[in-house]
Length: 135
Image 1: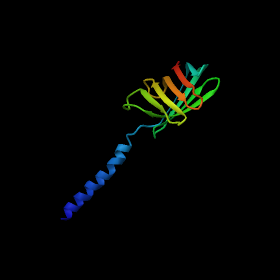
Image 2: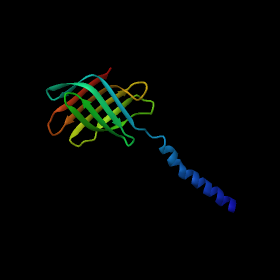
Image 3: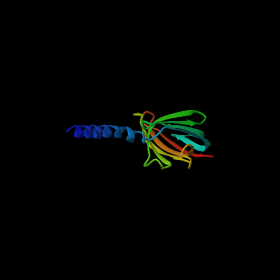
Image 4: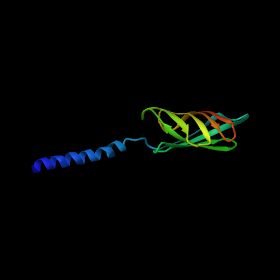
């Protein structure tokens, strides 16, 4: 009888550690930046994009900074099909904006190859379009 209790306790302890093991395999934060050339269209206005800085946080949130003559910040959520994928899907999380795009990483998985976004600003009624390619 004592042996059954010991086995039951060991099995329970093992099962309780499984969520911790699985949690350790979740997405990690990535901070990536790149200089390059691109365009940002804000309605009829057009700006040259000189650099992009993207923070992909562990909790699935993303912070996108577009460096042009002005600096644009976009809050988003990010996801990818698997850890090996170099394409990251972005969706805006701001209630005043709707849309998203894709961030492409280089083979090292830490630097930006390109960024494409299309976001509609509900307040101004303008669409923000970004097409950026890193050098």
